[in-house]
Image (spheres, rainbow, N blue to C red):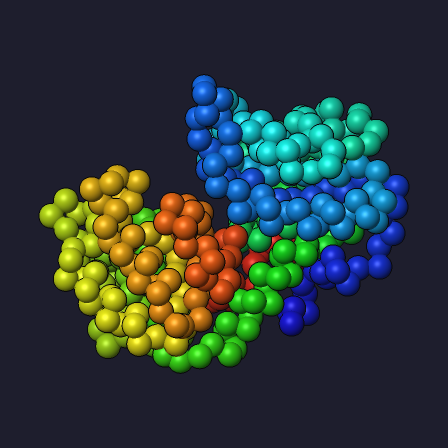
Length: 347
């Protein structure tokens, strides 16, 4: 159930897409890897999430699909290692037609086909939600669809500003995210254990909500350090803050054991973020053991976030989870607010 001021879902739209140009905001912030001196997509969960909407639009007879996406945080500067060229290659391999990487000027000139704009964050106006830039983007098409749930907690031009100038809808995957997380909020079996990790400071803004919603909140990653530094008060009855190893980069063994005991009794588990600097093999133990412990429970299991996706891939745990959100911060924000900036049409 969407709030009254939210955009409509694509599945419910009566818009005539035949012969139209569609602007499709997707989440292209994926991991890359070097393959014989060439960057290619490594973890593709977020890209696969966009395929149903693309197929839907093709079936509706659209003339041109212009996808909009970003990668990393280039801060408004062109950075070759954050080009979306590998993403275009992935779509060309996974669609029935070739996808081309274009700039805004070329996107406007092309008559038909499937295109991806180069990293939208190469433009400083994107994160500034600049109205003139939003209008310029809107001028590329006839209708806008937001399929980028994972970045829709950001008030950026391609997420929020553009909706002021075009008929706008929420995508098929976006709808699935909202419905799955809404059910989780309303009907989760208890006890519910939330596992919060990673390093981003913004996650701490959700600690109060999570500790009130969940029966237990387990905190790992670099967040225990941040909580200590900022002297954030938590409820010791509900919040278990992990202790780190001597290097300060992973959970210590006592915390891992304690977390496992709590997880074993959970009816619902929600997991967002690794338990340490898992990219380093010597600091991967906490993340791997907790991930496997969660996967082995009989609870209803939900996960979300880019780092979490990578961990699921590394340890082949995708099939152990009942739902995996494309968003990390967006999932947390939606659970707390029941809405996101990108769900509301700009006034």
